[in-house]
Image 1 (cartoon, helix red, strand yellow):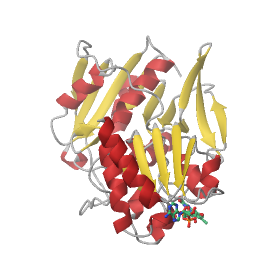
Image 2 (cartoon, protein in one colour; image 1 turned 180 degrees about the vertical axis):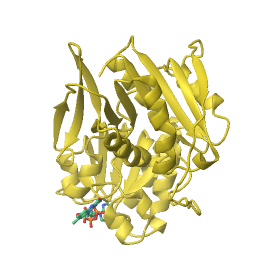
Image 3 (spheres, protein in one colour; image 1 turned 30 degrees about the vertical axis):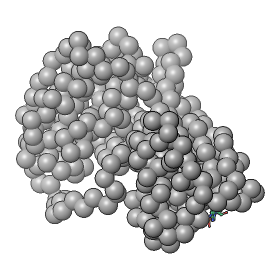
Image 4 (cartoon, helix red, strand yellow; image 1 turned 30 degrees about the horizontal axis):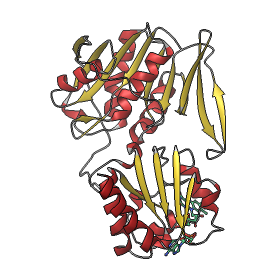
Length: 323
Ligand code: FAD
C-alpha cells in the first residue's frame, strides 16, 4: 500500500469519531509523502468536519451530501463512496474497525474485488511495504499481513494507533461530489441509543468494567462514579449483562465489544477466556476481586484482593483527593 490513500471518516451526532483521526495517522504512517484523501458522507454541512480531517493530517477531503445519507446504511454509503473511489485511482482505503467500518468495508471490498485487512492494531513499514499487525485467536496471538498488489481496504482498531497532533496551520482542499443514490432497500425507522450517554466505550481511554460480583444494578452506581472522576466509561462482563445489572451494549468480550483503553479496571470479574478476548490488550489492567485465585489476576498489571464494595469507594475518594 503506498501513494494515494483514502480515509473514510465517521461521525456521531455531527462530531467526527477519534478513530477517523487515527485512520489518517495510519495512512500517514504507511506513506508520509503520499496523498491522503478523506471522504465524508452526510446530509448536513460537512465543511467543519472536513476541516478537522485536514487539521489532523488529511491533504484534502471530498464530501458527499445527500438526503439518503442522514443515517448510515451500507447501500447509501456504498453508493456515495464508490464514485469517489472511481475518481481517485487509489492504492488503499482505511477506516476505523467500528460497527460501521465492519459493515461497510467488506461490502465495498467484495464489490471492487479487492482485499481487506481487518482490525489492525499496529502498522509498521518494512522497506517499501506496509505491515499490518492484527490480533488472532481472541487476542492470544498476532499475525502480520502485507499487501502484494492491488487496491486493499484496511480497518484499524480504535485506540491503538495514536492520532497526529491537531494542527490548525495545516491546509487542504475541500470539494463536494454529486452522486445519485437510489433504490435504498433498508428503511431506518428509528435510532434507539442503548448505551449510556458520555464517553464512548470503544474509544474510551479509561474503562471501569463490572462483573457478576457487582451483584445488582444498584451496585453499578459506584462504578459510574469512578468512571466519572477518571473521565472514563463503564463496561461489563456478560455475567453482569445476563444478570440484568446493565445493558448488553456495555458487554466486553468475544461476543461483545473489543476495547483497548489505556486503563481497564475489572471489578468483580472472574476473567473467563471470553471476557479476556475483549480486553486483554488494554495497556494497563487493574483487577479488583475478593478471590485471590481469580483468573483475571493472570492478565492484570495490578491486582487488589478485596471486597469491591470497600475498594471502589476508597478509590473514588483517593482520586478525588488527587484532583
Ligand atoms: P463470574 O465468573 O461469576 O465472576 C464474578 C467474580 O466476582 C468472581 O471472580 C468473584 O470472586 C468476584 N466477586 C464476587 N463478589 C465480589 C466482591 N464483593 N468483591 C470483589 N469481587 C467479588 N463473557 C464476557 O464477559 N464477554 C463475552 O463476550 C462473553 N462471550 C461468551 C461467548 C460464549 C460462546 C460463551 C460460552 C461465554 C461467553 N461469556 C462472555 C461468558 C463467560 O464465559 C463468563 O461466564 C463471564 O465472563 C463471567 O462473568 P463474570 O466474570 O462477571 O462472572
